[in-house]
Image: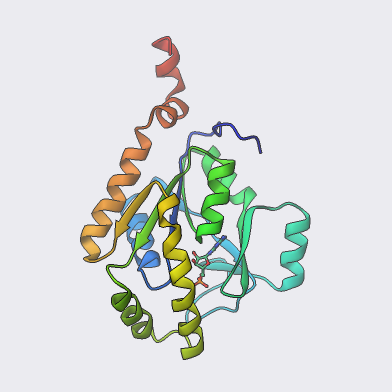
Length: 210
Ligand code: 5GP
C-alpha cells in the first residue's frame, strides 16, 4: 500500500478507547444510525466471550491460523492487545471502501496509529471516560471478565489514555447520547473534507476543473 491518499470513495474512521470507555456501544449506535457505514470485523486469537459469535464481533482463529494470515500479508495492521493478537483484514476493508462504504475500525491505539501511516486521510477518534473512577466502575459493572483481567485492563488503560494526544478527535463519553451526537458529527464532517469529496464525486470536481 502506498503512502498516498487511498483512491476509493469511502472514508476510513478509526475509533480507539481503553476498555470500559464505552467504545463498542458507541460504535454500535453509530452504525445503526448511519447506513453508509460498515464495520470491519477483525480476526483475533482470543476466545469468544458471552454471546459473541464467529464472524459477528470477531473472526475467532487459533495462533496457527493467525500466523498464516500474518505471513500471507492479509492484515493492514495487527497488534498484541491484553495478551491476544488482533488484526484488521486488508481484503474486507478494501472491498467496503471500493463500493463506497465508509469503514469504521474499532481497534486499539497501536492499530490506529499504524492505519494513519498507511492512510493519512483516515480520521482517528479517541473515546475517553470522564474519570478513572468511572472507568473502573464501568469495567466492574460489565461482569464479563475475571478480576485478574479487569486489573490488567485498568493497568493498560493508563498507557492507552496517554495515546489520545496523537488522535485527531477526542470524545468524552460522559452522557451516552451527547457522546453519540459528537461521534456522528465527526463522521459527517469527515465526509466533507476536500479529499473525501473529491474521491466520492470525481465527476463534479473534474467538471469544475478541480
Ligand atoms: P476486546 O478483546 O475487548 O474485544 O478487544 C481488546 C482491544 O483490541 C480493544 O481495544 C479492541 O478495539 C482492540 N482490537 C480489536 N480488533 C483489533 C484489530 O484488528 N487491531 C487492533 N490493533 N486492535 C484491535
